[in-house]
Image (cartoon, rainbow over all chains, first blue to last red; front, top):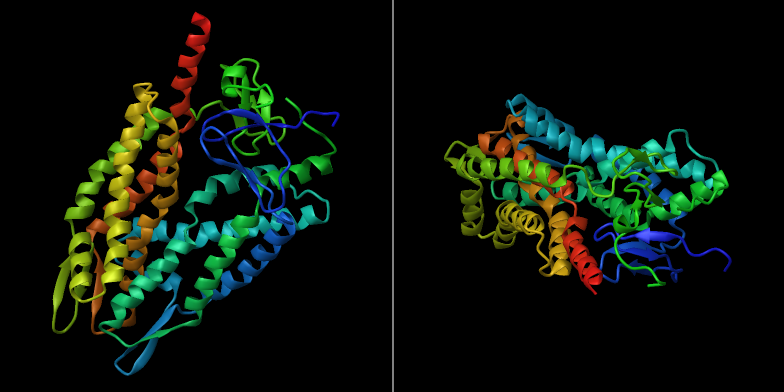
Length: 209
Length: 216
């Protein structure tokens, strides 16, 4: 080992330490506060890309088809996510409708698309234009994507509705369930550390403090 | 730890919040950018305590109308009811959906309250430069960050049920004014927890040890 291992500062307690090499699937935690510093996600870029691409397809189905349908006056009527946001907007609830639209549609779409846009060229050892702005944007957007909470919201509303109506689950219900799993899998296998290692390798530099 | 001790900031180093690269900051008062990704470098989140308090106080104020006003109006041919968050939970409990009642209670009442109280405790302890249990307080902060998003649940439920209106069904569901207040509470407490910098919990501890070392 000619060069010392790179430095890393804990994001929760700012303790300075040196990186260690991890076995696949292991995570390094801060010895002082216990925060997860980084993990050695197996095959991070390939796997995240695969999950993100399938999530993109499922996302279209989840947003284009009804989540559930209700039988009223002898006919079936379906509720889509966009339809629900639209009717909330119509009830003078523009602020709430906007929050729902952003957290359940815009941010997840943005996350999925930017992952594909970043990782596809990276796999071919190229850099996507504007990659660092996008990585910054991803970091900002990350806490606001709430597909898994929306999924629980669907389940709670199903229970509330079945007491008064005959409810038929739609295609989008299953798609949202799959989308929740795919986004969680993509988030678990995505490692910004691996992305930056890859970027450094392509740029042919090793930035040391 | 390989001859290293103490926080990066005390050694004149700063970790980038986007790419985690540790780089040297020559003049802490001057704006610096990360050499790798170009993000603005700061040792601690700028204005962390002041903006966190601002979001938190706004959250406390809106928590009151969020719980007192009507969240949802449900009307059908035979019945009409106005529900606040709590009465909605009680209604669910009485109609036998205990599991769902518990989930809604935790997500819409317990989590927002827990977030407001925890962030207040964290802010006060940081401002008093307390050295009490930093590890436990950091763990508390991580929990606040982890569970905070789940309070959005009720907003989604109201959204989906409000779509019934559009279907021209015999029953109608209308979102009430509490939905706006509650949505604001969720967003404000999330902003507050994003603005809080957990590294501030550890700073007084390090300073104190530094003084001890100086004394010896």
